[in-house]
Amino acid sequence: MFSYRHAYHAGNHADVLKHFVQVQLHLYMNQKDTAYTYIDTHSGAGVYALDSAQAQKSGEYLDGIARLWERDDLPAALAEYVKLVKDMNPSGRLRYYPGSPYVAEQVARPEDRLRLFELHPADTRLLVENFRKLEAHKAEQGERSRGRRILIEHADGFQGLKALLPPPSRRALVLIDPPYEVKLDYKHVRDALEEALDRFPSGIYAVWYPVLQRMESRQFADRLKRLPAKEWLHVTLTVATPGPDGTGMHSSGMFILNPPYTLEPMLRETLPYLVQVLGQDSGATFRIERGNQVTGTAVGRSLDTGPRKPVGNARRASPLSGAGSLRLPGQPFGEGPRKREGAAPGKDATGERPAQPSDAPAKKRVPAFRYADQNKSAARSNKRKTPGRG
Image (spheres, rainbow, N blue to C red):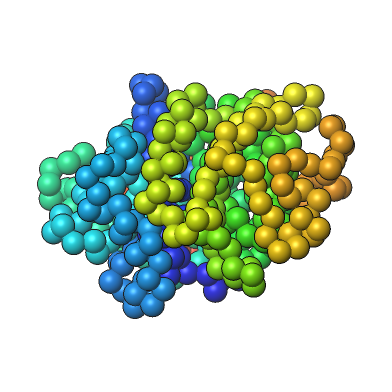
């Protein structure tokens, strides 16, 4: 379960697509005065050293962020993303790369809330330490701290998402990007989104996923198109022709539910540039689709640079490969969402979200940000010190 470490893949072409889109989503959310909640279900370590043994071993960043580092012809949207990476490398040398929590911390406003989940214990510790250093640096510079608006939890982000929706301000941006090493992750993502849309249908939900030859990956976008969201936007970036053995990740996608109206035209302007700069052979391309939910069936239009071409026996293996689906409009997929045990309760009898442990007022001085396990440890310690308890 805990084998995946993003340090090997930080800064690759998939990260470029994911974080470039994430920056644009934050900038859109920042346009309104009302604060919003950013929820990251699979946060990782937050910051990655590209000169580490893991990053150097894979070298994936060399075909990703490194290809944009010295460019002086970046489109405006890409320039904003690259500037964020350069700001964390003041020496001018590409040494550090931001994960999605760091991107959110830098682009979101101080009044916006960050709710970060990570299940890998080592990455959770790194995430906490990285945010401690970031808050200390801000204090030294005299900058306003986000303070208690950051909550880091060592927990399953799929489960944690339930307790946070709807958010207090009724504005939320949710990023879901599990490692997909376990095939059930694809189903877990869809189930989590279906429940999230039921709790908070107006939120912006961004899903990253690898485009692979396995059946679950090839059918994934078609399943998400049938979720009850008002609108959706689907973009994929391919940098190379997949090999005959199907190994390696040459393509990735972002699926956004309730996307900003500004996102599609920006992607149409920027994706051709990314194909040109990050492309490794003639198979480099991109694909953009958009659609809306109509009586349970998604209707979209393709804005890509050409038809999707099957690789090997992919078309025979998957009835959903290519541009369409063999499922009839309105026909349900499978047996419905799988119910997972341990789910957080929804709304109480009054229709309000039940109070969460994190909602209780703190009696003691808290650090610049809260780490959920610290509250649990303190509670156990106080219990042992209470007279009359065994």
